[in-house]
Image (cartoon, rainbow, N blue to C red; front, side, top):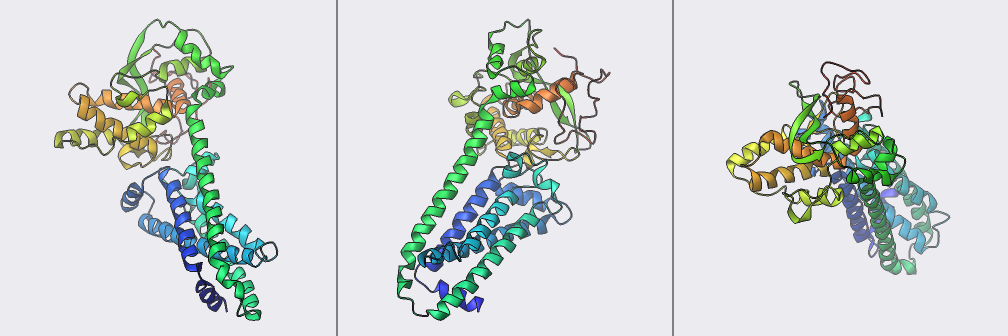
Length: 432
């Protein structure tokens, strides 16, 4: 009965286009969420390389097929909801379809991402390690979405089948197309608004760097501006950053040369402010094109990313590959004992770093060493992940107990790059 009802429903004017358009809308939304942390090409490459475990490729194929199936079931749910609405039965018979569709969409959205690079929505709400924390890396969420959508569609079709059996020649069926079109437009607008809200939240998180000062101990966001008014005693072109160990899975904190010169750590202000003062650069560097500035990290993220397809000569490409295999993605992906190299990461920050490398190699290739370019690339990581880089700085300088330390990609099984929190060690890096 359900199959016959489905065929009969899809034969009504406008039903099949509604299914396909609804599926396309949801699939596009899921794709956008996926690309917030990795590109589809990088996702496929990591699956082929076995980055997702023993069943890496099977996971990638299964994840993609489930996303397509969820989208098609979503389209069918839209047709059912529109049908119930047209018959003025939405509250009575369509409520379950609406609730199941909402739940299925939510679980599908939270399942989108990459086990290695992270997932946008789980990370946004503070779900530690994102999809990597789940046994099946998010496949269980997609499966739950299929169950919810499938149950919703089956229930709706049974209801519609009984109604159609009683009214096989409904004269109002010709009005379905306009009703379905209006419903689809409304649903599309709602999902566009949702994506816009999520993007706005991410932008706000990136823009309000001053709030990090509060979280790290400053009394107000305005105190973060105090660094701009201080007269430093010295300055330096170095930065403390994680560099990959020989095992290729963990990192150690090391001092690396940079292009941008920053003030030395001041002797006044809170400890948190002092760490931000020395790790987070300010102003517009001379080499930056189109006014890219450390002071506008979100705009800089997008601008640097636009250079990632810049063509390089063969020698420049060799240097580029070396640089992207030395710079690690620490705060958005990977695990403490499984760091992700920039070359394998598809998140927006990794893409921006690759754009930075390509631009610098093409424009200033002969002027700076690989170490200087890696260190300068981390200057930009610092404005995108201020809390993490400040925590690493204090850990490296023997002051890890000042604000604590959160483990991240490549930090080692102890979560602290092999250093002991709050103790002075022979291996620690002295503050400047």
